[in-house]
Length: 303
Image (cartoon, rainbow, N blue to C red):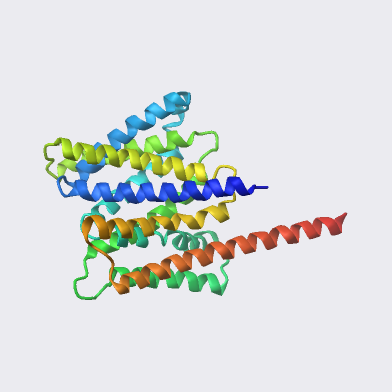
């Protein structure tokens, strides 16, 4: 049973972690003004890797590095790295608020993929939520509209990759430390960034850009630590909805730092995505409670 104080702590940690991720997106976009995306990925990944190695040493989890070549860990890292490439390419063109909102459709994509590949059954209400979420994405990226940029569709592709990543993550053995999984992800992203030198010419790093990248790597690691900590000893169904704080923070940072607030159509799209996601989470929680109640009743009747 999760106590009230633990759930309150989890909510605060989830909000903080979501804000750190939004801050990382803003710092990455600022760095992209000076550097190509491959260089941002490589340098940020290297810095994040050093931070994670230090944390592993402090926590006494360095022996866990023997799991770094686990097949599922590497597969997850590869998917996450590809998603990072697409996302960072997208935010070099579109606002971080729009990108953050679009990528929040990932849970809805996960449900749709569960039906297609695993034979899961969805109620018509959940299917409406999936459709509403996709319509919300369309309102943000505005395909066929004036000024449509194909780059705006990249976060939507990221949502599919994230859904696949989540399937893989659930199958990684519990004894493998989370920091090891995160470290491998940072290293694979770094390697992918270095591979980009074949198509993008790197530029000299000045102090200003180094500070941006260092701050970006720290916010990235803190985002992971805070969101992971949010689920420790708490009710996931209660904590998860607060992940949408990322959208609020990203929209605010986009408006304040880049003077790029969303238009009314995009705001409507964001609202549809968030509403569909919240409904899905509420529906899942209600179904889970009903299943537990049915099981408990059956057990009492059997006795």
